Length: 105
Figure 1 (spheres, rainbow, N blue to C red):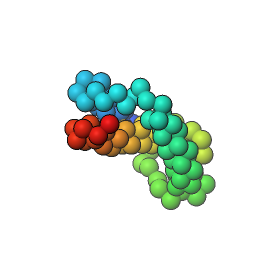
Figure 2 (cartoon, one colour):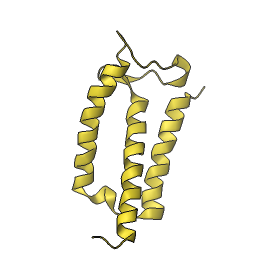
Figure 3 (cartoon, rainbow, N blue to C red):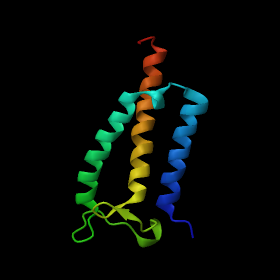
Figure 4 (cartoon, rainbow, N blue to C red):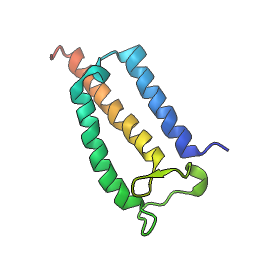
């Protein structure tokens, strides 16, 4: 059985990366500022998500059938990192596309 959240999060990553590489072509993945942004997002995601999903006192619980069960630091489901990457990257890509469409360099 394919875990729903893992499948959805992995699919989102593939769709967002394909959107950039084959449709939008903003060059975002080539920018140091993008990767620095992702490191900052990851840092805050680990802090907040680690607090929300910790197994000893969870605020957010996932159904066992919905996730892979792989949890990295502080009991964070690995799917959360995929989802976070896809969500933040999609927003930045659309923002960048709009900026380029307006001719703002």
